[in-house]
Image 1: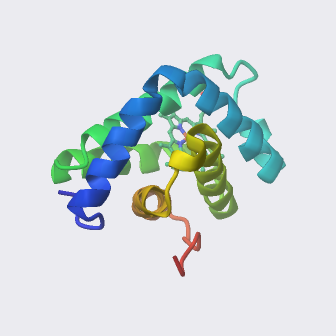
Image 2: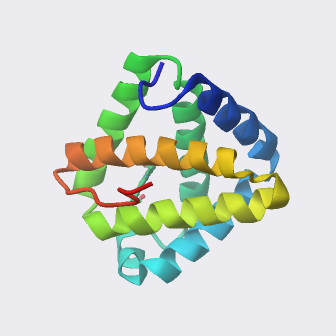
Image 3: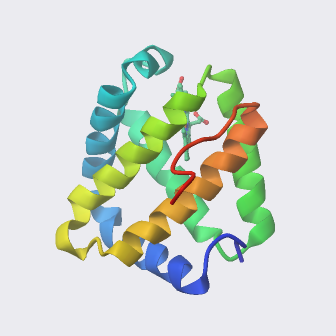
Length: 147
Ligand code: HEM
């Protein structure tokens, strides 16, 4: 079990991610559009053809969500990803924008079904993932510290 999330939160995140899997391309589109609005300086870090990146991100989230009750696997996915991202030139501020764009995208996708509990569960997950990734990438974390 991922120690930062309550079992009910793991369940909420899983079910909700399964429910939107069929529209993941739309979510990814929305997400990156929003992300580049919030962090225009990140645009240069990405390839011009974003189609594959959209799918890679969704697959990565699926792997993370699938590993929520396998602590070691969860950890190794995040650590590996954090080290990779250190090579990409990612900054602390990008992670904040990334989290905001992700929660915003999920909110748009779910509409009224994005209950406060579901939102909190996703925020808890993103906070855990980003703090590990940033530590591996040698960056300082400050996203939604107070949440
Ligand atoms: C939870 C957070 C994140 C996840 C799960 C994630 C996931 C991924 C994945 C799966 C890849 C593909 C790696 C590969 O090709 O093998 C990737 C690449 C990349 N990510 Fe992230 N990422 C995250 C946060 C960020 C943030 C905050 C930035 C900030 C700019 C970022 C920038 C990039 C860049 C520049 C690439 C390389 C694109 C390329 O040249 O092909 N990522 N990310």
